[in-house]
Length: 291
Image (cartoon, rainbow, N blue to C red; front, side, top):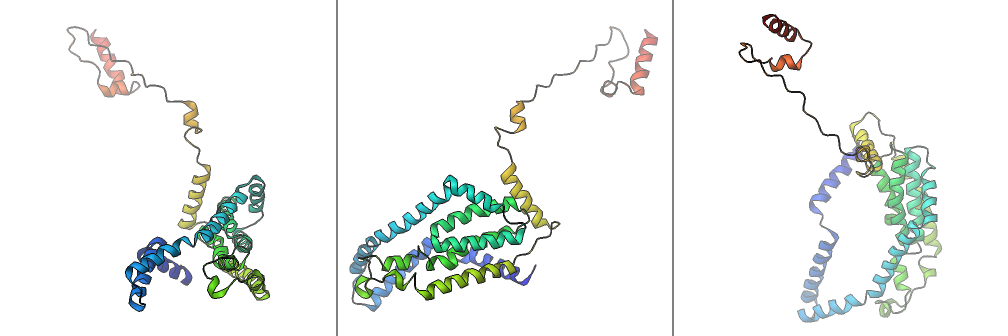
């Protein structure tokens, strides 16, 4: 395993063990701000609770904007015309490297237009690319799908901070006023920097892409898992379900009983199991001779 792979696995293990969920982080930060407000200001505990409650509801307009962005992004991505276009787009790459490069470019380009559309389309395209090219590194493909959320969405048309400060009546209007979008999203500095990031990181993630060895166990497991997820028939359409339950097994013929007064018992189980064996022939010949 290469050096970057070892670092990634170490960071993953550390994060899974020690980094809490986002909800726990929000609760911890709330209590930290509450303690600092009491310790460093003249506000009482009851006043801090009141401030927290009043400020929470001021974010309703901002929360509605974010909700509409996510819902509208999913509606556009799941519409039939866009779904057909994404299916055709997934067939364009001719190898694992082109899959990852196109996934990174698509995620970052859509992130500049709409962060909800970027995250939804990226999730759909990752599965399409994996089905189209089984040799692609699925981990790197997922990483490329998140580049739009990590690099370009905050400089695009759906950036939350520029949209918030451009909305009349936002909670910081007294301190900074209303900032127009021409000074944030559409400023020359922001546009030039966004396009530079788009090109540089598309080429950078391409340099990390390599074709995995088909003989490696991890590649074989990943390929089998993707085939199993996409090609396994449901129980209602499997061949066994269509043929119905197997027929019942009928018992075989029972061995004949020995004649009265005969000194020989019934043939052994081994001779009945092997009707053409020597033991079966000799036993029947001896019985016929005595009779």
